[in-house]
Image (cartoon, rainbow, N blue to C red; front, side, top):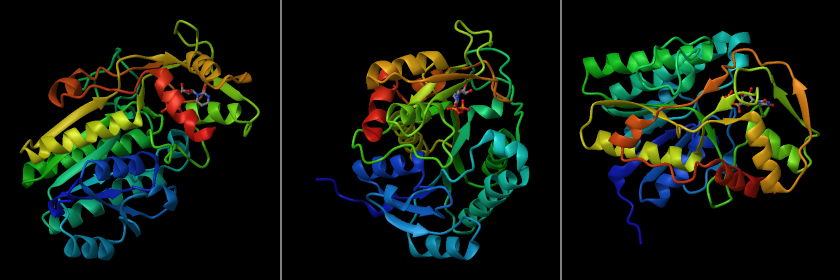
Length: 327
Ligand code: UDP
């Protein structure tokens, strides 16, 4: 039987969203006590399974004061960002308000209450157009849209806080998070859905007529974009390992989270056809603005330092696990 340890209270901001809800369930399974704070702007109340749930926003300083003064929080994990690149171009202020200003508000509250461990969901979008592939952490940082800029700004804030205070942080730059945990109780749900694998599975289960392939003239083997898909459970494991490094005294760490293996849009569709047994109808579309041809991680640093080995991130397993929640 697991014994819950009160020093293991972890505040999960955005814990009702896709990755945050998986993180909360993951921590709960290994004996931590997740506490979820989410304003439900994009999250789902029913995705919070085994955790205390607080409905509210990180923009609310009084609420943060209340949470931090009434609970002994060991660390904060922050998943509550807006993530749509296209929307960030149309509505940049929405992204700077939430992803930057509200996150800064959270960090200020943490400083005030002397909570000094922070795990931040960052993104491959901070690198911008790839200069080489696979992308390691030394690749130039040149985001090309407000979403990537907003994440990079917080990365900079974190570095400065670390220099000024005894503040420890981990920045985890995700490539393409995908899949669902084995419980079958959690899944990827965005509204509107824009991600490739959920959209394909919605075609397979009849919710949608077809999937549009955005561009078939990229300089890749089959002309469609190549991405590095990482299973959400492997992402959670990396967060836990990064937290353990901070607990062991590491001041800061920055890691790419991916597998180093890329799959094209067509390969993903073919794998989904095989797994679901459904003929997934495809339409040819124009390129989507801002999509680089190939985005693949060099995650050697995370694998080495965190002793992290993705367990579930081969494409078939990712799609099988996601399909369980759709079928
Ligand atoms: N994609 C596509 N059709 C769709 C959605 C996505 O062809 O309806 C492509 C997209 O251009 C990209 C890949 O699938 O090359 C993954 O896109 P997604 O939005 O899932 O993640 P992103 O790479 O933008 O983080």
